[in-house]
Image (cartoon, rainbow, N blue to C red; front, side):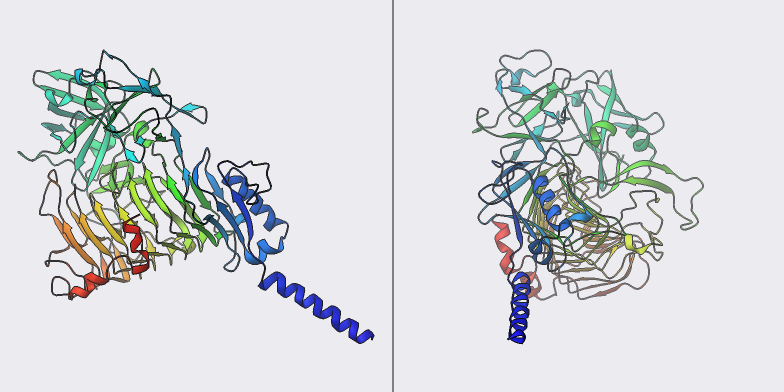
Length: 629
């Protein structure tokens, strides 16, 4: 009898453990815009904020909750706009395991949005405005207060009316631009036609010049305007003035009949057509001329206010592991640096904070180098640092001022799959080092602690479209120094410059990059504004890297590009070495190999590649619905 009792107890214990492990469901915490952070977090009583849900999940793991520790935690978000007033920070304490991940997920049938925007409300008719506005604008404008975010007035640099981006008032409307008359690097002045000022005769607050310079743009805050007959001489604020006139590459092209194009923005006098807005910073008012069909009494108007919506960040010793975001949209990430310091990027949106020409030429690593730069990284709505196994599945990155998603450093594995990157001011996705900290941008990046190198991430079946709307030199997918990154079956279109850029540093020296794969992507309608570009572009030595079976067509530098013939379907730029480029379909054999290193292999690229390569390229069948979403 005693023996039977012991056996029965053991069996009951075994069944209990087996049930808790094999059949336990993940812990669930529900979030709703109508919830209450004091609530339990159940479906019937959801919390209001994602950060409270994350805190509850953290506490479940800390206290050893069986479901949370064995099956993971699901934070389920109901639909609607979840406004983030501070960055949602995912820490090592929030880490999951492969079998028990931490998941942020849209509830079934719901479309939740994480927004970093501030709503601009209370619109009223501006009446018969006078003063600095154009005659056209009188009787057409609406006005509202500049919103306050975190106790301060928002630096309004972009605005969305409904789902449509409005235009910061420009002197040159639409796609039109003017051309420089003179560019004096010693005096740090630009001379333009006086008529290009659009009726502005002085440097009003907020006046900016965007100038196209080869493969990038620059955004310069105008300090002074001096009209001299039919010409006007402009100076610019520090620090961008010094950087812009000192840096050697890329400079504005100044050739007779083909001088660098520019446009001016940010003055009340420029507000002269529907869809444009202007901010009176001193009065704290924003003015807008509605487009047809826009009802300012009901439409939701948003300006980006928070730069980083979500930060997943651990340390090298304690990385964040196994965190998943599924079915969530990230919108209205801000990018405010140009309004404070201007924006003078070297390439792919990476801004220079110091740059100058070397005389005499040369560094210990590169004897013929004539320039040096130190860079700052373009902001992104979602940032990942020192993390393993982080995944984004069926998410949307859209309506943002900067880049969408950024794997900065120390990231391993993980995936970005089935996501949409649309209507972004910067690049869609950034990954790896762009020497944006202490390293000079031309030195080979090969850190002693290899844990900081991003590696092993899969970027697949994503749609990238209408990116780089603020900085035209940004790209769809930008990978710097990284290794074993797979970029496959993505679709990239409607981009002003390059679609996929892999590598950094302009160096043939051994570095941290290698074994990257760019395979089966579908690229078309790109380089719509810029030149010196390629559908797929590489830099520096990347041993074992493969570029294969991609389809690329419709590479058409825009009307203002400095050299409309300077483009390629595949472009291996300075230092590119030890790569294989094969079986890429394009309608002609137009490729570029500029100052390449050794070991590159080119096989069967061009119109002779079977049409089936084009057919198979891009989104795989189960993800083609993204084109219609």
